[in-house]
Image 1: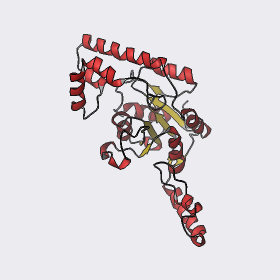
Image 2: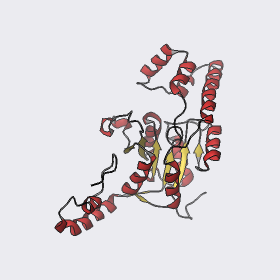
Image 3: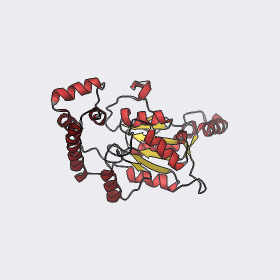
Image 4: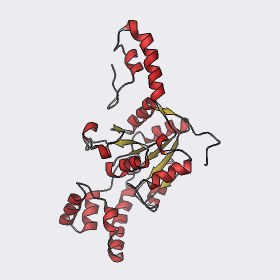
Length: 264
């Protein structure tokens, strides 16, 4: 029997694979398929993070944090204060104007270097084509700058509307950008899924907004799904964008937005 990574096959697939006795298959298949259909909620929009989700991660964030914060000791202290992670934008919000200017200049330099090596994440084009074919909206929220978003759109020919950069305040993990997109789409958050590679930014943003959440964990750095603390635990955890496609097909009724509802 073929199992999808980190996903359980629905009952009708188990039946088709011969996991249940043949003589019971027709009746049980109808009952289980009907039950599954009743529990599949509508999904009409997908919102993506950009860096590390739609694009291959290329920015050396630890090096950036060390330079901005002033060395290894300051970086270690910030990591400890943040429970093992650093929210660099939050760190510098309370700094004076001159310190903030120098910090943003350093961040911008690292981001420009990253743009020169920008690569599309494997599976991104196929996933976007899948969503377009089913008329499912797709938006983007990033803590990167608008110039990076514009370059992404131009270089890879995929448009995300709305596409919110860190110029939109407040930024992730605040739910405001995701709620803004839902309002723009005229779609309730519980019919939208947030897909990203950061628990503290993407998943927390989605959970606070009341949306479904899907964590992209290519390297397994977050460990098993069951080991993630409940307050940041995503609804789904995958290791590739191809698996996101499987999650959407298996768990949701993909409902296109009607022309009457569309604002775009």
